[in-house]
Image (cartoon, rainbow, N blue to C red):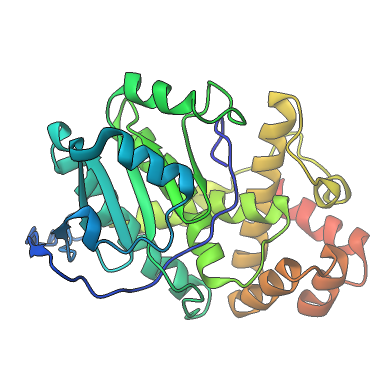
Length: 306
């Protein structure tokens, strides 16, 4: 869940040949800046008809959404995603979303030790560039707050265009990390780890997408008033106050950063898999990082964030 939005855990996607489609492969060239940005990298983009798309990941209410506006929707497939966007809103925004999404697919797989795709179908990304249309759609989702900005459910992501490029990229990077973790991990991580991963990989992955290498020292500069690890590991649902939600995100991000930058990075995929499989956090920390107990982990973590 990106801050201020509602998250429903994501499943993920795979590959399916396109049949009966008209190929329209964009050929934007990768930038050649010294930073090596991939923000303009070429992706496989194929305009398709609704009948020809990979429909296996569509939720029932997503099918209803497509049926309601019928011919107003346009559709395209990339290697790992199906994009849905309104015809009168053009292709540009959806294509940029697809570029960043495809980057994160490879990036998260690499960061998780070359993790393999566990899911059989593409994910569906619905883009909303019109706030009125977004609010109309939200009214059909009674479990979501009217303040929900973007969210994902099952194999579907519903993405509202942000008021500026930076916020848009931040939101997509965070939510896409959720998708990719579920894409490459068999089960669901506990809440704190799920959000910590999304915050950490969302930030560092987005920087790499832009061709900028970020040093951990520039990100982890000191954490004010964090949660204790005991409190963090005990959380099973989002806190009721904005202050506590902020603490959850920041403490989780810093602890994931601690494990990935101060400990051998190759240990993290196994740690993640065990926690997703139901192992207690304290047991996983002892197994993968040799912490004698929670107090020992807290002591070392406190030195890291101060």
